[in-house]
Length: 298
Image (tube, rainbow, N blue to C red; front, top):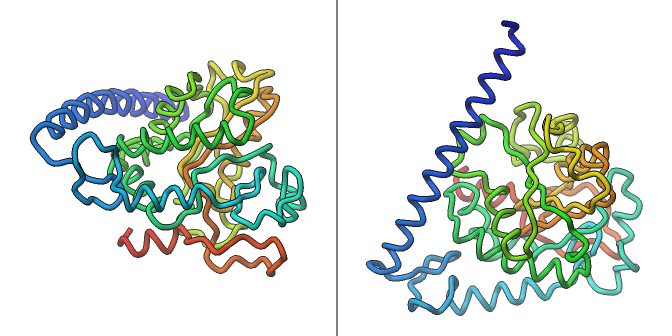
């Protein structure tokens, strides 16, 4: 047996085991949440404050902050936060001149700041499934406000490498896509896989290094990729920062025949030390992923 074939078999087995553990873990989490609702006081999913049972998943303060973040204007094409006068039609003056940007539009809950930070990091690093369900409800509303939710034929979560799947408590993009699919009545289409394990984008400070890091990182799955042919597809992830991941993933979907591609994310962030010179439509300052994860000791 060739080394490449042996490697593919090992990777396939790891994916199978990860899927089994995900299913087992999901069942155990559901059982625990049901028991916890009875025995333990309910806590806010973002700040951890105790809240009365049956009042929702967030406390009043966090709910108000999320409402404020959702009201902020952003570019409908790239998702950057900006003032309404800076948005020209369906794109801003920045993304319209960015040759790499190949996404038709972005729907988001808000900027990566305030309570959206723990909402994302607790989902990503602690496997908080309730966070995915809560975010999906708000994200579904954002997609409908954007005006293209009804055009979507399927949701494609950003795939995780097998090594990172072993390291993380959950596949956060798949959890979010599943919850979002239930909200909108859409099927989840995991038709793309990671071909290479690469360092986390979190530790890369420049846009150029992030694009180089994910170059040729994705590929179509042997079976199923053709199912996107002629369809409008939505990529689902927790966050967009430089746009490298969604833009690289969209190339694979386009080669598979996708007609139009959108992206739905919980939040939009910007890089630390963004080299772009200030422009009239420069995004409102948003907290970066890098700073937040450093503050959390990750």
